Image (tube, rainbow, N blue to C red):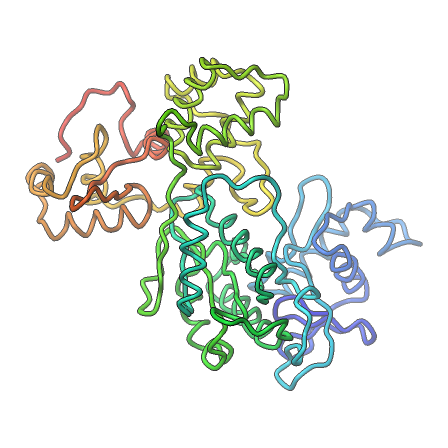
Length: 459
């Protein structure tokens, strides 16, 4: 059995890392094997005591001692073993069985991806308003683009879009797809090792079908926000990516890698503006989620008008819409409108997502890659509190902030990359604006003044 770069040999009760044997006690091996057999599911403390020490009375603290020893053995990969407070433990990555092995220690040619830890996750529920994005993604692969990045703000649905499109390619064209989430990679080294293992595993996987155009195999690198350097290095070092010209990479991240061969597809928020009296995607999603959570809800014209107000305040972000729908079903739409009008955040918990577990709240999407803005970035950001502005206002911002044009442009670029500002194209004019959800988050963190604070120039 293999998990990441660790090999577990059941017959000899050994743990190897790159062929080197690691020290582990008998009880420690039993505990590790029990967690691995659970395939990522929670193992309760009671079950651990009953199976690891069936004939001995031991204290629950003994489990913590052995878990600590296992984590020390795993080194920088210690986060593979996760504690579920008050309940038990789980492995954060599914292990996969080893078949015949090559001299490199990776599965031999013909490996079955369904038996690895890199299986494409399942998703449920209707996907709203993403037909155009899926079409652009398929077009990129049809043009034989090998490095495609889905970029956009947290909660916009990049992971869902990647998985849905990959599932379509699996079903329609027989493409082999592997999936890696880098959300739990605690260091660049652990991310690099995980990406490398996934690339080599995909490279050795049996080809299901030779496609007429586009890739035969795709690796999804999900949640790349904090692993850009590791991703670039792993791609450069991978023999699979260098030699298998029909293996493509699909990344999800807020900011692009800015690599020379990268194709970037910006994932926009759902449209929150009505067209020809037809309901827009954002409102349609909101109403659908409310009806699912509260089937007895009455949906009339007044409800639809308030729903439009809510999704506009949520910037059309699917995660924010889902969160608002949950509290609408619980509290009623008037209460949610009341909270938003007064800049009161919705409770910061509650939405458990199958794909993006770190996004349990809207704030957590921002905190995921949060870095305090520099003084220059903050000064420029302050100029977008009240309205959007086009590039023609740059000189005004230069004068107001007393900074050079070069510094202001660099700050704008960083703010857009971090999705604190959104850039829109209107004909030949580019405009920038601060999303409402970002304003609320920055106010609550004290980066921006409260909504009712007196306005002043940033100096």
